[in-house]
Image (tube, one colour):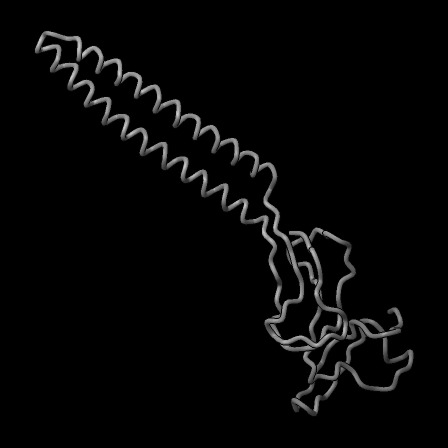
Length: 193
């Protein structure tokens, strides 16, 4: 998956369902190439197989038209019917194979689509990863952090003893009447641990 664009900036307020990023999926290029080869081979085999069987039937029909012996005519007629049934069965099986391969190729091609990532909650964007254009993303990559706007992440005296990465803090939110305990993960001008 490739990150195409982040649509929000730090401190933006978002609502659940707001678009926050654009990504593009990418199918495995080797799998795509193989799927195209398999489909072309199946389509070619279908066309050649039908042409070969139709040619055999046409030759038998010419022999039938020239045959004068009633017994031989009956044998040729039954052979033609048998080959016509085999042709119909072959056509059905090969068309199913072509359809299956077309579906597989379509599924791979659908992975090359542009998709939108939406916010899952209301809040304020508190962190956005630094990105480069067309950045490759690994599964589980954190693109941004959205914090609950009703929670004060930390309030207290701002001195070097309190604002340190990794320091445990407890905060009471009067808005939600709840205490929150956590670890300092970021703030402007924060001191390193």
